[in-house]
Length: 525
Image 1 (cartoon, rainbow, N blue to C red):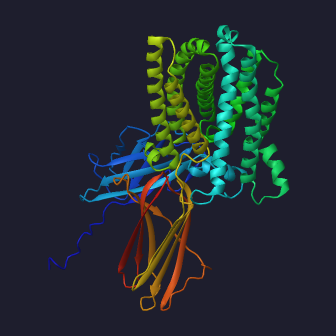
Image 2: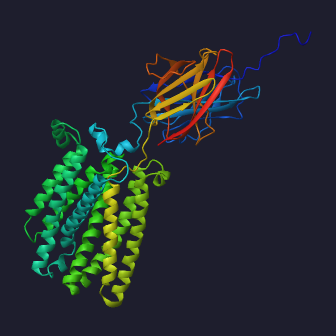
Image 3: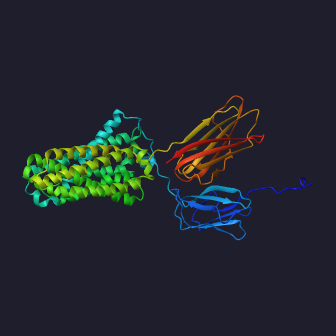
């Protein structure tokens, strides 16, 4: 008789209502997150948190449980535009853990930054034309960029130093002064012409003539090319001996490079452009000063000793400024420090950092030598010049490539004796994506009873799974397997809230109520 009596089913607590709702897009930030469950939950254990687009908690406050034990509320600070993840882990009164996660969006946040952020082709609306591996075309491109950056740094530095070294500049013989003013500017004109020609040819491969005018009139990079050429030719017209005028001319010249580089695509833009400009200015002072010192060492040894004292002080200031601004720019470009080891840009930056350390060591030895004899050593100066050349080679390469890894769509297919599964996530970026799941069931089983897709963060395993609301659709893609029937499902929306390592889990229930589970690991940046 006891066995025949009705028994209470242990239906664990489940989420009945959420505010903001899963997948909602809000014009204004919510003041709180409120979750309502169908039965009482424990208030002493569990957690409710909200993560931002960098997967960091937006508040340290704890959620509050209502008196009836059904509603969990977490007050929120003022949230900006962005993608937010709500994650809850609670214990129902029957002692079973329950968890889950969902995503909501505030405002109209910008697309997540990845390699495409720094791709000039993407900014122009063109597909890139880069080839895999190191080709003859890429070698030519990098060689031209090295010549351009060398000419830019030397021309700007040669224009800045006469005003900074005003007293000693007049002691340099006039013919040598004229060459130091004239030759770097002539080299800049030739290098700028070659640089703009090669860059625009590479950018506009396969584009109609109408696109060329748009390049120079409607894009920041094209306008910076025009400004560069105008300033380079204007430098040839500067009168000899006008140090202040040349100093002023160098300032917008450096600005044209800052405006067209990675800094123009970083955020916040004002901070990136400011740091990049200061970085370029001190790089020009160091490179231009070292060039002047090497020339004076060969032509006017006595004046070289005097100039070396001024240059040594500025070189140390430049290294400190370059280090600080370089760190600041890296933090703005990189969304995660680990990407330094995942991209060619990061590897080159580390090599460049090592070369700067060697430059600092050479500078220290030069300073010690000067205190002893009053003259820098020729071998040390040549070593410093060689290090400068290597740094400029790296700059010519890594200012062209992206500091962030590239995201690629997820495309995965698994064959089985009773079921085949494919998953596609495109473009596989934090934010909006399209999710497509295709199931091929053996005809002896029939069509699936239900198909679920869930995403779980591998970097934050404590977060609950994010449910993707799949909807069936008519699939026109030709992909058939003899003896199997295909069903297709998809969803569009913001269900990948932040970059990292993820597991996509497909759960398929067949007509016999047997569940099959397949998992795929992937990552995005």
